[in-house]
Length: 586
Image (cartoon, rainbow, N blue to C red; front, side, top):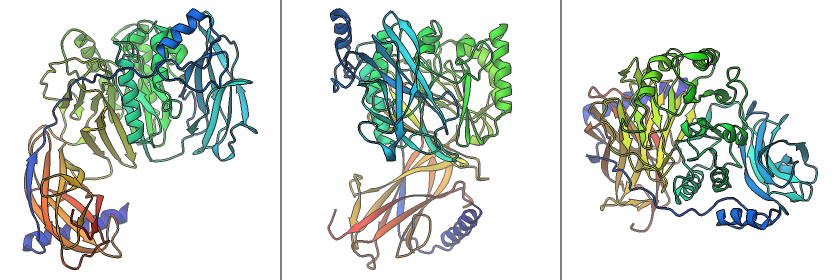
């Protein structure tokens, strides 16, 4: 880390000197404001519901389940109707994994599991553990198993069922003691809201897992289903998540739709029991890597009574006992709202802001994850109800919406950094030591918001670079250019403040045998331009003519720096993009 900072400082000084004396300026640039327009609502037919493995139920009961299913799986679980298994944690993610599933017509179940390296299709040599069961409704049982004494950082194959009647195998990977990992956050899902809701949920999960196959777990801020007492909606929800939530754990909060009748929610999800007495699983916390996560039931987050006192005292103690570098809190109803119409719950938001937010602020919470208002929103960093310029000086509140239920007409509150209506989305959060990067994508995979918090830098990071692209003369994205040709580069600048910012953007191209992503090689040219960066961010462009010395097969590395008006760096360089030189015209 120290060497990297020294190298960065030296390189920044060199760039400033080159800029001052006008050396090696072979490019030119321009800036263009980028405004993200809200997407129209998704109209996706449901494609997956409960998976049916046999016909052990009565004809009428089997017909109900068959009507829910659009995909037919191989019939490996005989004479049972099976609800998709879901992973959670109830203990240490490094050494345990909890598996839950539901089956019609059987009173017992178990899990077979084995390290992936030793896996065979018949699970020979696998360990087994019996499940604990609870009856969801007559004839249908929910099972859960906490697998323990697992090896950290190890992938296991597993299957659930009974002898002769097993599910298809799936895998999970235990956590390690790491400071580099990614996780996913989603807002309301509302399976059962209408006939398309389950299909929207399935599409979003599939897109997220395709975009980021290395995510370690998912967080969800409540209102998973529209009617928490409707077992069919739960069954549809889980079946649509097949292939994702049987591979990575889902850690949910109870939303207002679950809190009104939490019986099925608490039976379907096996969650940590470390919350306040009497409210276990409705409030809980867990650690992963260098981060601490607290999950709260906002229906219990009032301003008086036993539930309030127990919850707020537990929250204070839990956060004070966290030794992790990053602290996240998730609950359903937001203290900072984007919508004040019917269903917005402004009164509860004020209670949360008055009584609960101060606990978060004095205990080092970095980000609060919320839902409820059926739109996407991110606030500027907030502290004592004031917008902070530096992302590390306050709490960013992130509101998600993973459903096709939308509220419109958001308020124009000054603390809102980004708001999108009619958008179904998920957020990928990546932690790399002291740096948190956040990328929000819609159900088609389009990036709709980005943000970064850097705790390890003294630079202001008021403007940051989130991506770079290679373009042709028509501003279309390409992957390579011809030797001794021309190239156009684009970088996207994020404005992390609530006011327009002035910045200097510097592009540098490097190549050579000793060139790497972050250093080395010969400079092929530098382009510099001054940019007014609006709050919505800006795209910046630079054109280069490649020197004759560059031949086909060369790789070009791109550095993008952001400086203030005094040519002082305000963020670490963006060095995540490169392109190839070909012999053909592009």
